[in-house]
Image 1 (cartoon, rainbow, N blue to C red):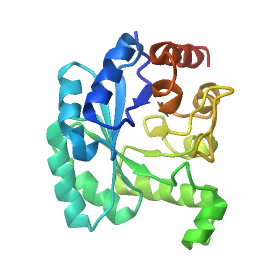
Image 2: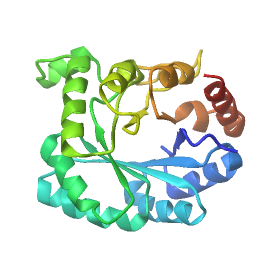
Image 3: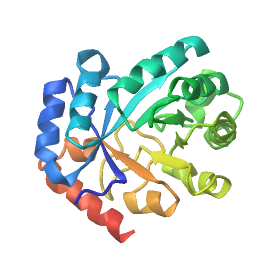
Image 4: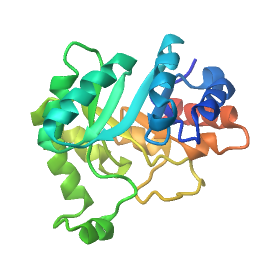
Length: 228
């Protein structure tokens, strides 16, 4: 059985490649992330198909617009039946998404600070605080807005877990098995370390989809998670 805490990121060129990856992984994974790369090339239809097969779906669309637009977009997205949807962790955006998902079971996650960003990049973007302080500020805002959890680096997971309830989701990208390449990620951790820090779900992309044997790679990660 697949570990429900493991989310495989389908960051692939098109929906056909994504469907083939799902077939390749088979029972090794039951939860999939569909992001912006697939959104314009059949991502929403893929989400519906995966849900019809009994699989779980995380729509990592990172909505960010005026509140009225976010609310309407979220309401439209609920028709895909997805389990999770991301929005940027800005209070008006999160509140609008909560309103838009009303009547559905879809959970909203606030994206705190992207794991490809470090303090130097945030300073370049004009932020006066580093990644850790910005993440914690946005976690507090996420709880106040009524979303179901946040997306954050494994490096901040322990401190987040200490200030939120057990039911609050902490979804961590930037997860790399020991010895794996970091790629463009700055703040990474192993699956065992991320879970020990309090993560509820791990998002893993290239270490699975870029492996010579994706199914074996997913199974190895699941074993590491089970032993954590």
